[in-house]
Image (tube, rainbow over all chains, first blue to last red; front, side, top):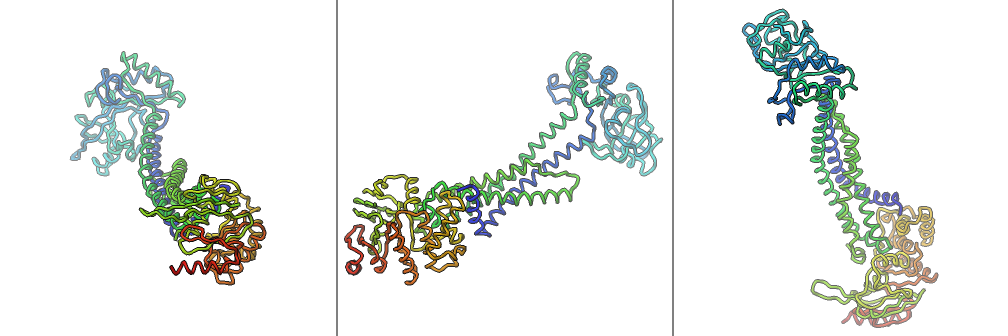
Length: 400
Length: 240
């Protein structure tokens, strides 16, 4: 008996009980659709994060003070033996040929007030180069002008929400606000940027980096964003920056991160999350498998006389096993196919309703859910099928 | 040639031991037509199941064409059932979702016979039982007599040497029963060994030999013409 004939024989047995078949098929379909939908959500989240990072540009290296070997802490979290200074940033820009430009960044919080209005916001000190690296657009006025890193100036750029909160619709450009203890002239207002990687760029005040460091009385930078001339230079530039800073500090106490490294870490975390969610959803497939087992047990009980007859006409026990396993496999894989179609429809519906989340069921998830449903069918179909083969022919033939 | 020597078959129903066959010895020659009669519970069907290798004796020897089959394993018994034996049952045992043709082809399908050969064999077998035009009907669309003839076509499709029939007319009206018996007679005349279990004297009287079983023992062996003697014996048995 060929595989095709076996499947045809089994398919006709399955098709003989439409309601029963339909219900157990539905169980598998719901399980597969759930796996697909949740995997698509996880994948959508991963893609969302990747998109957020990609908007930052891919030729960037981020240098943060601190190194796990020297401080025992996460990079960027306090406690470094040497300050990561403005001079370090200047050295990177001047001495490494692959580097196009550098934007040193200092961060603190500060009170900003104008007349009766006052807000506490994030203060970001940086340079003119920052505008190229973070895709910054201006609503009005100009961004920080090009000038010596070490030179400060009492000028500030406001985030759009902050500007609105302080000026209530009036034009802030040219006005003077109080930033901490300093009086500063506003030279520009950022266009609406929204939140990027957890920082709300609409509620910040930006000043020249030297001024920011003086205001917060710090000598160490928060980080330094380095743009290389070409993506191919990333590795070389990263090595040279590390070597340069190690030489300047006498030890390795900074960490260089590239976008793709950060990205791949995030991507991996989200992929693991997706797998976990898919695994949880696949519990419903196990439940569907029990449904198949139930249906197959009923089928074996109902067709006991048929099994007896097959034995009487010389059909081998392993052939009877194969027949019932094939029925379970057909139920499971047909349910799996229906589940994939339903799941895909739901994913498309979700994308239509929430376009911001690029939900997408990857091919591996589709293939895996189909394979798992088939496996579940065979696993849970095995017990009933084996029960069929263990019948005694004489008793099976006499079964009422 | 079928040779049974001192066959016993004991069932255990809980604590109780039931001796369905108790020292049966018999020889059935190739091409012979034998009827097995006896009251209910006398062991007729048990004997037929043993002859058909659906069951094994508890003790004794069963030689089929010189080969001892009482000790064969499951797979070897399956092979003998497939190649040597055809069954006809009182309740036909047709698969309801398959057509008459597909029911007849069932043994060939699992034996791995290609589709074309299956179809020509089933057509010939259905034609031989007068059902060539009913091939694509399902069992529910056939009369009792037609169903039994389909079962007969299925039993003979692999051309077995031995045909075993358990009350083949038990569920049929007399005209249909006669037609089925005529077909069985014809197959027997063509050389197949025929063993029929029956209550019906009309069925038994067609046999070359009648074995009478009572309480798991062969108590009488007579020719087909001795049916009246058998019926008197069984009537006496019923009275006790």
